[in-house]
Image (cartoon, rainbow, N blue to C red; front, top):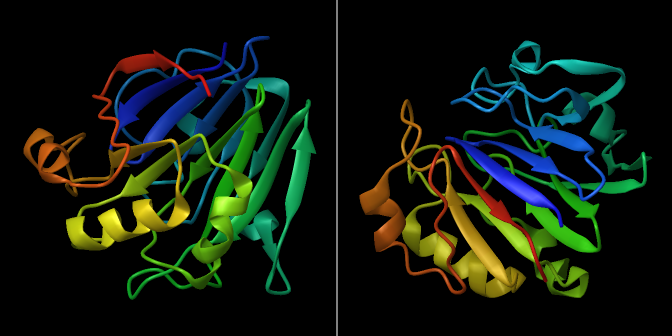
Length: 198
């Protein structure tokens, strides 16, 4: 069974049933003790791209916005049986030509790693992916506020919507997470690991 370990802010780690390790936007918290098979970076802001925090296997593949968005085309990848599709990410603080999100398929689950974003046009297509989990940035300063985030959750129709990136400079903001009225809300705290299921 795949697992998700939330490190805090916008950083988390996925582990497949076979032990493959994926770090997404490494920066915050603890939990960098497993060697990475894949490291995903959504953009080059310093709170998302600290790949040196992650121990890496010899054949570790690092995919950042540079590889994921070429000639304005969002790329797809297959690494060690994990399918990764880059998708749009943007808002007034994040240039769509420099930022991406990812839809990650692992152990039959589809996980939307949004990076830093607000509502995008492409999100209208997300119900067709039948997302199991979506991790959404809801700080209301650099990303969506709680109201827009609730709209996005309703639009993309993931089975579980996890609020992250809730307060700049902090691992988490419990009050803000509780106030969010997104559908299918699932609150995960820093240093908490959950089993993923569909």
